[in-house]
Image 1 (cartoon, one colour):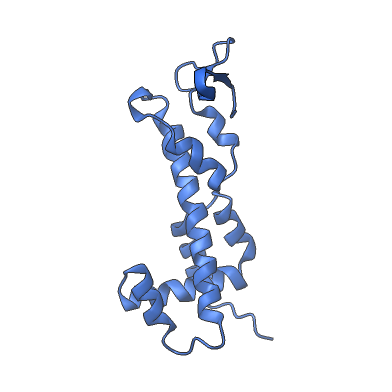
Image 2 (cartoon, rainbow, N blue to C red):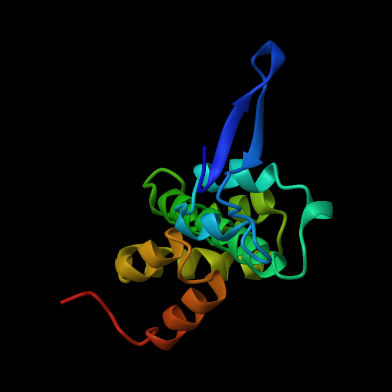
Length: 155
């Protein structure tokens, strides 16, 4: 299905995954195929199926990296949703309170999130896209947004 796994249909049509006959699962290679899977729901499914008890110390970095890529994918889409919500004309001045309530965070954190989300989506679309691809963490994007705070897009 993914990478070097071979689907083996057992009785009842259940799918079992087994390593291919080429001996693809060397030390630290069990999850190497996840580096080729784009960040998104198609990465979440194989990650959720991983049995942590079968991983070696060499497999864990790939496992952690894949989850981090998935987390930044989700963070990018959360930022896009926050930016869209804050930009709706009929929401009014209470959007920061609504975001704080929805995300269970303090009002000041919600205000910062809204400001960063709007700037990253509107002014830094390539940076946002890098986060959505799992290449930049939300902490890195926050640093870029803060560093470009003095830049204004109004002419």
